[in-house]
Image 1 (cartoon, rainbow, N blue to C red):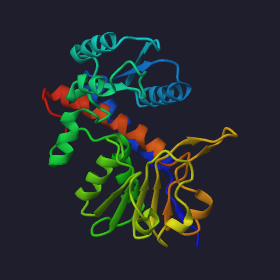
Image 2: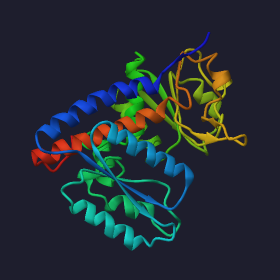
Image 3: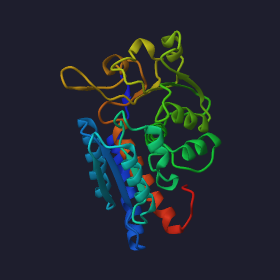
Image 4: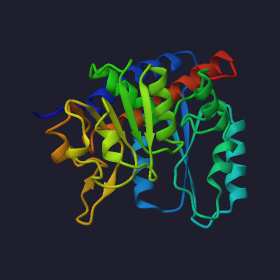
Length: 289
């Protein structure tokens, strides 16, 4: 048996077409969606991510602004820029590229972004809305994963989903979205005992731990849907996910590749959130939907 690959690039391309149509409608109504991206420092991976996000944004017809800061930037200077972007009616979405340098408190910065412009879905307001089942911007990676699973025709209601990782960016919101889809959810982390025993029970397995090839075929239930969120750089310069692709593809029913799986969908969901923020701003409403 060989797993059916879930093509994130193809699905993201289709989603970007719908975003492009939405942007065109907004432009016709006098508003061009604008995404402001904040980059602090010279991390090569962050620069690549920012470049890809900016190009994808412009491809939909939206505007993209890059606000660069040197590595030694003080937290106060960054907060001042965010405040200015919050007050700028031209800007509909604000993205702070992570990680930030050690002298800057990540939580403080993310909470400074207006919830109405928090297209990454990291503000406590939006995370709280997700917990409460209320309207808000959902973190892009988990939102994209739900679309990938449903597009592949994998049922979620009543299924056992296991999430490896408990970050506020992927793990926790992923679990909440799976619960929203009526899955039974288990969250595993670095202190979890008998990890393989738990993962082998999963109908849907989401790996988001940042450890290359940690999930092997022996840890996967035959026929399971396996979502690989990890992007790890190996010693030879190649990329690998958190899943050992070679062994897992012989066991799983569905599997996302790295690259070309979750990554493109994360960017597509960011663009969709930016267009939605612009639409909400045009309607004069305070809360994103």
